[in-house]
Each structure stands twice: as C-alpha cells, then as structure tokens.
Image (cartoon, rainbow, N blue to C red; front, side, top):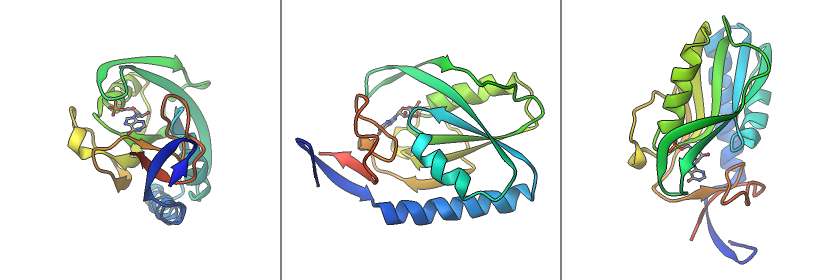
Length: 175
Ligand code: IMP
C-alpha cells in the first residue's frame, strides 16, 4: 500500500487488530475477576492500542501514563532508558497492567518492571500488542501478547517512524 511517498506492506489489518484486542480484553477481564485495575500506558506508541484495549476490559479501571525514551537509533537500543513523563498518582498497592505497543529487545520493559518494583504495587502484569522475538536481548515475561511479528520495522496503530505514521489504522512494515 502506498502511504505518501512510501510503500508500506500491511502485516496486520484493522479487522484482525480489532478481533485480537477484543480477545485480549476478555482474557484480562476473566483473569482479574472483578478487581480494580490500573492501566499503565507507556507513551507514546501505546496510546492507540490502549484506547481500544481498555474499552474491551470490563473491570473498574483507572488509567495512568508513563513516558519512556530509550536512547539509540531506530535499529539499535542502547538499553539506557529515561522517564520523560511520570505517573500522576502513586502505584503503591495497585494491580498494575502495563500496556505496551511492542516488545523488541525487551530492554525498555525490563527497565520499567524494575522501576515499578520499587513503587510497591500489589501486582504487575504486561499486555503487549506486538512481540518481535527475533530481537530479544533480555527475556521479559509478557502476560498478554497480541501478535508476534517478524524482524521488520513496523508502523501504524500508534507506532511511529521518526514521529510519523502513528495514524495509519493497521500495522504495516516499511519496504
Ligand atoms: P525495546 O526496548 O527494544 O523492547 O523497544 C522499546 C520501544 O522501541 C518500543 O516500545 C517502541 O516504542 C520502539 N520500537 C521497537 N521496535 C519498533 C518497531 O518496529 N516500530 C516502531 N517502534 C519500535
């Protein structure tokens, strides 16, 4: 598919995203058995996924945001992660569900999980829309995973390329 001057291959179309996100929401709803949940949305890439996922979860739910930036170029993460925006309220004693767009090397999420542990939440689970297992550098347990993707740079549905393409309604790979 042509998008601007770029050719983008559709990897996961909007219907498949919708269906899988609904299934993930049902699974999360079942697992928490009515307990109130704090969704921790990792900005920026997760905001589209999170908006759909929380509406598929039938539980009392609060939403917090955290901004993370990992240094390095598009293809190489250094593992140095910076918090660019922190939560508004403490996560102490909360059941926290991290909502992440993609687990690539795993460095960002492993940093976040360590950081959250110091805040004494009641529990922490991870929902990631995408997993790129071929790039794993640190193993992180993903409690709810949407799709496994090949080793290509993916965009759309919140994921960007140099800030752009977050608004395309499917997951694509730039050719
Ligand atoms: P990790 O630390 O290597 O697991 O990657 C963390 C972050 O890098 C993700 O949350 C994304 O924001 C970004 N990222 C990694 N791979 C991709 C990709 O293929 N497309 C867009 N963003 C990506």
